[in-house]
Amino acid sequence: MIFALLLFMSGSSSAARSTAPAADLYSIAADGSDQHNLTNTPGVSEDLLSRSPDGGELAFVRGESLVVAGVDGQGLRRLAAFSRDDNFADPPAWSPSGRRLAYAQGFSCTGARCYSQQVWVADVESGSTRRLLTKAVEPAWSPNGSRLAFTRARLTTVGRAQGYRLSVIVARADGSNQRTPADTASDPAWSPSGRLLAFSGIRGLVRSRLNGRGRRVLTARPRKPISEWISDVSNIAWSPDGRLIAFTGFTLKGGDGVYVIRLDGRGLLHLGPGSLLTPVSWSPDGKTLVWPHPTRHSLIVASAGGRGKREIRVDVTTRVTGAVWSADGSRIFFVG
Image (cartoon, rainbow, N blue to C red; front, side, top):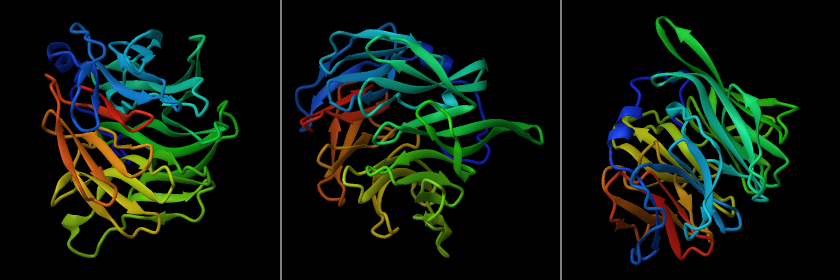
């Protein structure tokens, strides 16, 4: 989700999805060979892909359903109906145990505007679902599964324009005991230790303790040139060892791109072109990242140090919208 105090809404993309070629779920070797179509569903598109913590299952959205399947595409099961909100379209979040999925939905929608955002939780084994939070999007489990961070989205009006006022909230896993570490913020992401949060704020990428203290802006606005300031931070992802944070951001000079940075705000690297709408995924060993190319039918793979960047061309008919690594790092799953 792109951060803003107000997220203004434009035309719906639903019509575009209905007339465009359908996207499928694929698997490809990390060296770019051996591509397989795992679903082959020409009548319906798939997106919002995430992998279970143990690496055995994939969750994604197929049309208007939340589904799970094995990493070979077999054993596909529908867990729940899914009501899309294009302003807050994020992959479902697996709990650390792999037993639950948290996901955001939009209701009472008119065109591109949904008047109600809710976070739901599905039990992966039984398929039972329940509404957990209202006025909420972007759920993220803490590493031990005892808490959830999420973004509270309040619909508001400035002049004649409507949008959302956003805040980062931390709560117990059942939604109780809510606290607000950051107002005017979004996209919360837990550090691997569970002691810190990173999120998108007005001034860029921010990290802080869970109570909001110890806050530090990692992408502080430079005195000059302003064209190099990174804004619209999104898709925040900590490295497995917690030493680096990858994210997407926008600059007036370079447009949308993928970056990594150290926790002290130093060592900022621009890894390549990206999209604010598509996530970045760390390899299991924390050495490599993968993300969709923003304009071509391909994936970009690069080391966290910026070396050895390469582009993997994939055989698809639609834009690639998501990519995740297999548990052993030998393959990449993607939708396109």
